[in-house]
Length: 78
Image 1 (cartoon, rainbow, N blue to C red):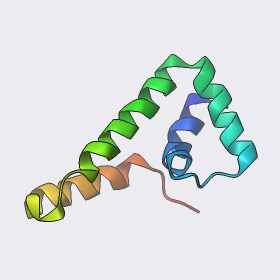
Image 2 (image 1 turned 60 degrees about the vertical axis):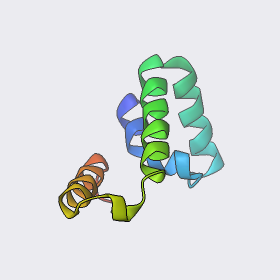
Image 3 (image 1 turned 135 degrees about the horizontal axis):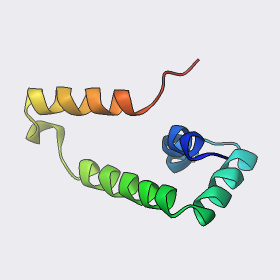
Image 4 (image 1 turned 120 degrees about the horizontal axis):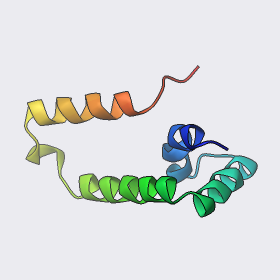
């Protein structure tokens, strides 16, 4: 599995939405690739931090910017 494939699958991996064989391939790649392992940890931290912020604490501009940024992180699904 390539780094690009891991990046594309990381959200589904964190959500537990991958089939077992794909999850295993991601885990094998993460065990061998420090860059992707760091990326995964950064995603976990980001999700944790954003999960601690209530929606009413964000301005409309911030909320819109975050939604656009997350939308741009993942390729569109077929």
